[in-house]
Figure (cartoon, rainbow, N blue to C red):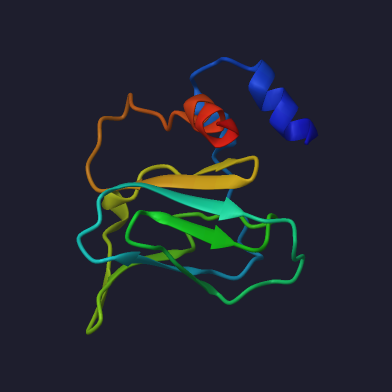
Length: 131
């Protein structure tokens, strides 16, 4: 909660401070994204379970997933991003994954091309969540 309050008081649009630092000691994850999906992927984390989950996160067709462990950071240096369909699993090129932001209770990244000056609208997301 403290981190969320600090974030809410900070109106600096530079979200790079929320990009996690590499941690080579941790295991890697597979992030499975519906084939052809482009746009923001939102992974909601939950503090209901402190157990480490499966090493794969399956994203729904709407670009959202729930991950029951709030201690995770995703990193393009270590983790693997795939497009999946019923018949195949295809690795997404690293250059098609934008910076990963670990906001309080939310991990977001963009799949596909985007302009670098378009950060994820986290404050707008919080407003929508309250409504």
